[in-house]
Image (cartoon, rainbow, N blue to C red):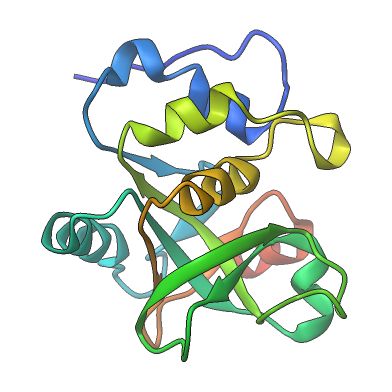
Length: 175
């Protein structure tokens, strides 16, 4: 069975996630952005790994990340790891579309998330940010700053994200 909410107005990714609250209720859930494909040429187990770590570590937020060239950090939510960023790392913070100079790393969100219902409370109190949208990254910051725990997982070697909302990446995915 599939259930999906309808976002009647485009007020940002955070708002879209908030629209799922009546369906999700008080259960943990996965967000997989439809404009990004993982596992196209190489099978991806990132969501499976994320769920395992979410349950094992009893955290509020798990986010998939991929390394991007420094000049591209301006297009993504970027991780601020607490300490060295190995394959799995603790999140200190996240920053939405920072300048190259502001970016604490080059680890960009890879369009997959696992959340506890704590994200809904954070989204309720998140004001519109960049582009006057309710940014999911800002709500994640709110969860972390309130004492919630978050971790990041890097895509494994060979896993690749194709952003099909971007023509160049769309072409690479299907060429």
